[in-house]
Length: 188
Image (cartoon, rainbow, N blue to C red; front, side, top):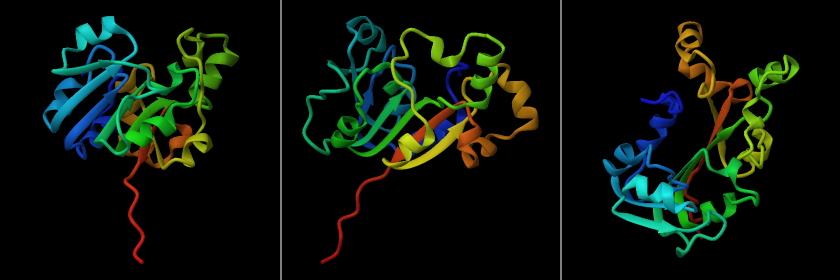
């Protein structure tokens, strides 16, 4: 598993089933995990990434204008996407999926603050990161969890701080995982 992938993130792909959208699929890092759970459609704005992803079904499009009907997908996975999109695309991602999981860096990560104070490159110094989200920005959409993804020498930190810690204390984590559950119809 790549250091960019996190066991906490994989835990949330367990709920994927049926028709699945890998939104901003990039080179297909999540292909094996998602395809083992259902039929996957990969979308990305970069055709070179789509060529590498090799999903059976791929569409070249932007996450801000997804060419699908409301609720088309049982599960939508958008890992490390929303910080690269200038316009907020969470509502659009949520529109096409019943159960949505989105990951993004924590713009108030204690580690990132230390890096800025020490004048080290921060997570957000990447020129491809055009938006930043805090936990409170994301809470209006659904449940926010944390993860250790992005920590330097993660194996060192995991000896002292278990994965469960990041889930329980997202504000202290380096990255967020936003879970938007299906809306339950009100009984009348």
